[in-house]
Image (cartoon, rainbow, N blue to C red):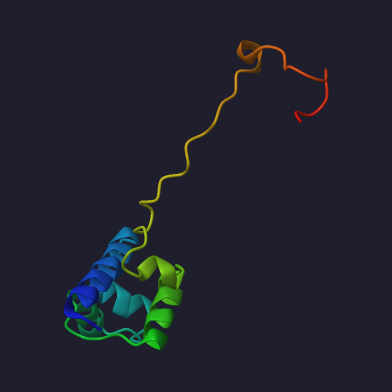
Length: 104
């Protein structure tokens, strides 16, 4: 894993953790010691490589899909919903063609 990729992955991990209002020690407490604060911190800094298995377990602990932790994807909660499309049918006027039926 490249150093830059590890740092980007770590930034995603930190963003998820802080969005959930957890400190590193809070993660250790909530996980009942399964996730040590020093280990999670080293993942977040990109100092330590995380295996796919451990990443999946950490994603499960945080309650997010693994894809959300991977660099190059939207950060958690940052994805904006698509804009709503509003059609003003009165302004559009009558349809050319068949009356009252679906558009061809």
